[in-house]
Image (cartoon, rainbow, N blue to C red):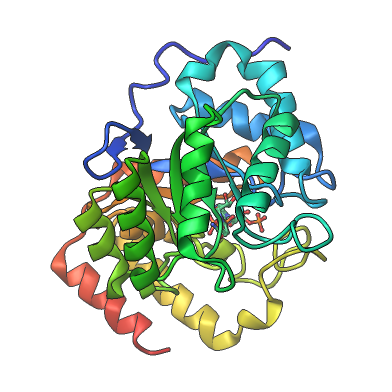
Amino acid sequence: MLYCPPENRYDNMVYRRCGKTGLTLPAISLGLWHNFGGVDRYEDGRAIVRRAFSMGITHFDLANNYGPPPGSAEEAFGRMLRDDLAGYRDELIISTKAGYGMWPGPYGDGGSRKYLLASLDASLKRMGLDYVDVFYHHRPDPDTPVEESMRALDQAVRQGKALYVGISNYPAARARTALGMLREMGTPVVLHQPRYSMYDRHVEEGLLGVVQDEGIGCIVFSPLAQGLLTDRYLGGIPEGSRAAREHGALQPDAITDARRAQLRQLAEIASARGQSLAQMALAWVLRYPQVTSALIGASSVAQLEANVAALDQLDFSGEELSSIDALLAQD
Ligand SMILES: NC(=O)c1ccc[n+]([C@@H]2O[C@H](COP(=O)([O-])OP(=O)(O)OC[C@H]3O[C@@H](n4cnc5c(N)ncnc54)[C@H](OP(=O)(O)O)[C@@H]3O)[C@@H](O)[C@H]2O)c1
């Protein structure tokens, strides 16, 4: 059926600026790491993407290797672009990345110029695009000089195949070096993409200061710790959940009784704020002004809608933050 997004789709979404750049992103962005691959039902993913755009989510995050199989999420998204979003390209921020293993041999992994530029071409082909909005180096590569990877990102922009660039998973010191190089070259860098959630707070120890100093944004992935920071696992491991799936990245043994007890206590704090645990976990990562967007995954439209409702209550009292810190310190 023809997709007609509502005209008021931008009215209720919150948009935040990537540092001091000209680019704004929705406070909640949608990632296609899981649930959009060749092993998943196209129509399920399509419904999630359509609903996201209808709610003002303008940013969709991909990578060369998302699937499984690798590349299939980009192919599915390319089909969605053709089926539903063809007339809306100028309203979309589409990102992709290269950095993890993608094809056999020495040139399909890491951070070489050879790999990054070939991979971007392949991603554009799979999605049927002339350019992406953001092209990232997906992870630091200790065997390639940072300068080579950053020059490859710069080249992608000069070729007109990316409007902006970003880095992902770079620790603070290496990020500072890489961002300094991009600044020197005049490359339009807008984002760092690190993992951040109540269960992984490493960005608080330096990285948020680096993005602030460089005037760029920060989009944080797995803010729900892949579903752990929701009610998904409180009563067991449901069939079809990420922890139950063969290719799931969430290890079932991470879900212990002690973890469940802690999650229930966090859920009580959320409930007193009028939120679900998932909604509080999203508001919590967005409490730093440096965090431009929380990059979520979803396996259903209902999850997506519930998560976007987190934006109704973003403020925290000092008491709430201390109670959360105290609970997390029990680990
Ligand atoms: N740069 C990188 O290295 C990197 C790494 C990882 C991810 N990412 C990006 O970040 C995106 C998000 O990562 P993520 O999927 O790990 O994020 P996440 O939001 O922490 O986890 C998403 C999963 O949590 C569950 N969930 C979501 N909302 C829920 C709700 N309201 N109630 C119950 N369960 C809920 C769903 O799992 P079920 O499937 O069990 O329903 C969903 O697939 C990825 O798609 C990708 O774009 C980037």
